[in-house]
Image (cartoon, rainbow, N blue to C red; front, side, top):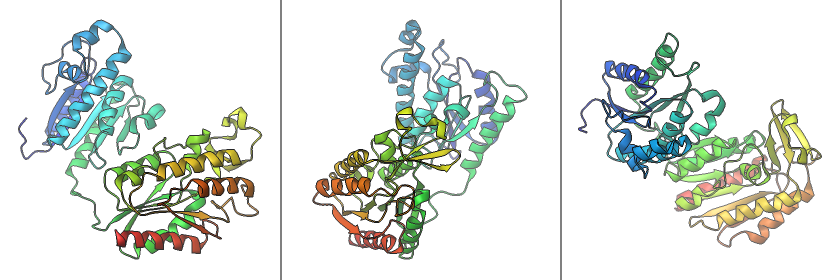
Amino acid sequence: MNRDAAKAVLLIGTLDTKPDEYAFARARFHSAGLRTIMVDVGVLGDTSQNVDVTNSQVATAGGTSLQALQDSHDRGHAISAMTIGATLIVQSLFVKKEFDGIFALGGSGGSTIASASMRSLPIGLPKVLVSTLATSNGAAFVGDSDMALFASVVDIAGINSLSSQIIAHAVDAMIGMLHSKLEKLPSEKKLIAASMFGVTTECVTNARKQIESHGFEVITFHMTGSGGRSMERLISEGFMHGVLDVTTTEISDEIVGGVLSAGPNRLTAGSARGIPQVISLGALDMVNFGTRNSIPTKFAHRNLHAHNENVTLMRTNAEECEKIAFDICSKLSHSKAPISLFIPLKGVSSIAVAGAPFHDPHADEALFSTIRRHIPRHVELVELEHAINDAEFSRALATKLITYIHQS
């Protein structure tokens, strides 16, 4: 493919079932002066005409053949193979700078294949997916990417008065992204990743102001599972120069079984990337669930606190705190850059201080003492007689990170 001045949109689609829909989208892109690159990931028949990458090529890249997938009559296996093949082809085209944005329309199968390719691409590259499952399985498709997800409202089964509007709006969104004049991050400042939750907001806000007064830019992430995954990804991709990981609460959900886990790799990217980190124990007093009636029966007797009508918090106990502390220490053992862990002895969240619903000195001591026993030697351990939201504590965090970055 020869690159010219016009920007290109890569389209991934099952042309065996949605040829009209993609023809409609391509025509709209072309009318806006954009080129299109069509990757066919359908398996029903040979739809090699009017495409740039055939379904046979995708199947081969996925380690099989189109004929084998057709003969197997196994839809799940076919989707898995085409997902692998499409992702490899998309990554290859991206490395060659063949496209400027990626677009797809799909039901469950098409959305699964296309979204995997989108998630493999760096944050900042425009990504648009129109899916019939947007409202029911959106999080699974988006993952830690910056994908724009459009609900199809109606089934993607032909062009009609409703589907044409939805598809046109999604196409226009991609066109708008590609016509944007923003070519790079607006700031030339070094970026700092910070983790925050409602119960640690005061700490992070005060630390952010102090860090930014020294010429850095702080990017704050909400620790809701997806927030932690996004933060880890951006750290891994080299966007960040330091980490202020005040709020490690997602580890509680991963270990205990809450709904806001960021996965087993939370708290690993900074060490792998080798950038300065200042870490604390924010909101490790809690595990997150939905409404009160969504709490698993085995936790019904526990200390529960209604954060709001849709979020119920459960206080971590001593046994859980020991496991959480050990997980943190194990992950920090791999760091090669300056790193410190701060313990707020008077409370790890706004509701863990004396007199608050989650005040539990026994559980806190299990957390703190396990960290003391297992903290790697190269990690500086700082214990302060403050609660996490005390001004003195946030000031100490910010000062330490600023020092590390200036020394690195």
